[in-house]
Length: 599
Image (cartoon, rainbow, N blue to C red; front, side):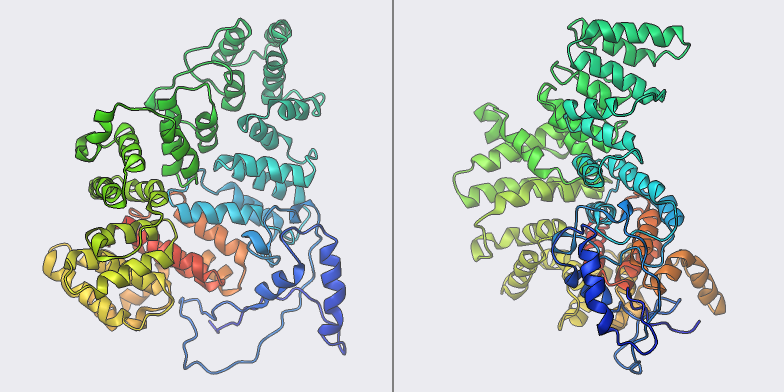
């Protein structure tokens, strides 16, 4: 297939008229659409930057590629409408005004409906949130209401409760998609606005709305009205589920039931003034949004709240501050804090993390704090090796805020590898590289510590003068230290470098990183490799369609752990992001994958 030069272009030119003659009217018109996040000019400039030129084989245009004149694609501007509304502009995380260029509303809505409810990757969780909240011209087509509804539903599924309510308010809470907004307001603890939204949906016989009306009677102090409404539903032959009915009757009588019941947004609102306990096994069955709401419920038992937020964090939700605030509110005996660093791996659970956090926070000096944090990092690393894929990233999120004022120095050299990995895991690339470079320059160091950072450092930067030598040394070390299992991590690193378009930087990877499970020999190799590529992802990436490419990447991963994701899919996910100009996101995903896969 011929190479293409995708360049997002939003202006339709007429014969004989220069492009600049149409720029000002379009910018002024775009400003009138209510786009948030700063002036429109930067958005147009950002999307005008051409992504990497690629072909269907996933190859970039190298430095020796012949120069080509930019091409202009003539397209109609889509109608702005409510589908163009968002809360993130170019200045605060939006993905550009041309995000949905070339997309059809029905196709985009169908893909959004397939987005995972729980991203095990914090990088992909953040990318999915930004995609759904970006201010951008809506996709073409008449199905604007379905596109809006899909965005709200996807936000709510992934636990972005307040974002769902904010987007619904920005849209105007029109009848296009009232139910996700109502659920979001209940989960956000805003019963007053939630009940007002319920009252604004007259005549609906949808079970959720009928149950929401009953819950609002109880919230407004009219328990007898709730009981009457329940009897009417029984008379009509449409009784609510017994667990929900029991919850309503118990709360109306001033009691709290022993467990949560569906629909969770309503029962959480009903139980907001009552003490409740939830078994740990039940937490795994709750949605991310329900977990976050449960963690915010001041009347829930503190162990329940901590467990709920830890579950949400394992799904990629950014709840580190809320979790730290819950930790800080606990008081433990001095003996528990003194023995925190001696916790064993078999006891490394929520209570152990609580003890470690409080002990580190109470440490009187930096060396004492780092001694406790180092024990935490070792436990998390051991748990990750045993199969707890998110253990190291969760530990990083909880411990990095405690590292303020601790900079690279000989006193902390033994902890440099742990600190750098924690910084890599939380997106603090600059600090991570500072610790890596310090450790690399140290005259006496543990080679294992340095090699735990080599792959991460090579992936985190666009180019690196010493990446060839460093990765070559890393490969030799892997083959020497783990001769029987070295092929897998080397193949993982090769796949990530291929996704970043940098495989030629490391010649040794081209020969030494073969994956015997996914390759054969001869002509069959090329044919099978081409067949394993995702054609839909490659097509939209080659066309420079950013929104559809990100959707394809998210549904390709589909919430799976990056540790268990086949490396060919991981390669394509990184490649797809890079192909549409999301280079930083591609590198962050590659670094996160390297962490989880213990490279």
